[in-house]
Length: 368
Image 1 (cartoon, rainbow, N blue to C red):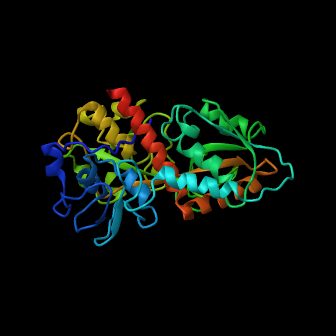
Image 2: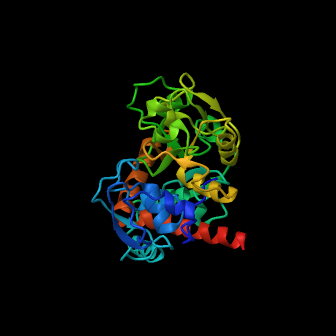
């Protein structure tokens, strides 16, 4: 699924020439960088890390970046170190240890309350996987939230790999209380016709505050008319590739749907990029981190496929409880309190960067 790689690699001549005039070629990981006119998230990532994957930069600067497709010159960004820590800050491991020590000193209630039963699935590295410490980013964030902000609830985590069963069966029947983790649409936006998936997630479930925001990009041939589209409307009429089973909600929210697009749904990101290369699709739409990893695996460069620098999407992942659960709102409120404290303390980012470091080490070991 998603793969993150912050390794410093040698940029090809193609990647270097792809940098905008505003990007400072000397910028490096583990420093602060001031955005220059003409910079994009991708060009900053290429200069700092040798990869167009800018999701880690977005994670580290979520408090100052509202639109990753429109950076303001003069904005100061923290470029994460190669271990995921921030410039001039504690390492992720140090911060997590400090927060765990502080939480352990908090007086706990001796009133018994049943453990909160949470369910996740495997194979979605680095977000949810039994192969990673604590079950991956989203699982670690969920369990930690129940031990912060005065919470002291016991919990259990089970992995059920049939993802659809979580929302269709397991939560409605009360087998589990919380499912980790799901894309949640903006349920206040009724400017478009909701799909069945949107109706269900907005009307049948209670969601936490956004836990993690994923940047989605649009990828085309360099010479394509869609490479320089400056608005979502400019993509109408395209043949767009979106992997089978992936939510269309984030595209529907910006006005892109089966009525103004021709959609193709292969099973993998590799097949989507192949479709763009062969002309079967004009545009591929999926996450920027997955794009960078797939480009690397396929040996492609920006001479082959480019990311449109003007349009991108944001999708938020949250934890869900079913509305029929009598404790749904209580559990979601507890997790929200913990998540907010974790954001304020820096533990939220520390858990993310620590898991990405672990995932990178596994990927590097597998490639050697």
